Amino acid sequence: MKAQLAAEPETVGVAAPGAFVSFVRFVVCGGGVGVLSSGAVALLAGAMPWVVANAVITVVSTALCTELHALFTFGTGQRAGWRRHWQSAGSATAAYAVTSFAVLALHLVQSSPGVLTEQIVYLAASGLAGVGRFLVLRVFVFAAGAGAGVATGAGGRGGGVVAPVPVVPVVLVSVASVSRSPLVLAAGA
Image (cartoon, rainbow, N blue to C red):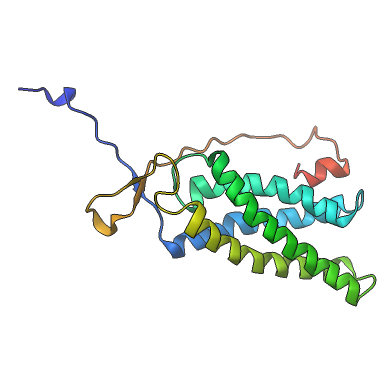
């Protein structure tokens, strides 16, 4: 007779969130990073052309958001990995094109728009691109079975994806000793 302690441990996980919960998480994570990115683009645009500033911030924010979406939004329970980063980068490239086109079109219509008008156009285009990104990420990048090591539930309620609960480390950062250069401010410090 086998002892209870010698038995194989059972993996306990959390079912991946449904579409509505994922969308709310996507808006909170992606929208929060997007709003911060909007300010960072405005700051960087003072030191370089707007399109270049948008590209730099898009790359940084995409990498951050892909990790947030893997761990929290779509509940994979694991880091994104290179494949998901590249797939996410494809959808971010489309979002970059949408935001850049919107702001460039604004400049064609109005030769020198104010910062507020530019930000409204940028954020509206970002919102539109964000809905498209959510659909691509949910259906293709973070879909059930799309990632390595994702197990599907067998006969459980809903039969959804089971993922371990992620542990996210928290790092406390002091801003008092950080330089106030535009580059540091654009990085969010």
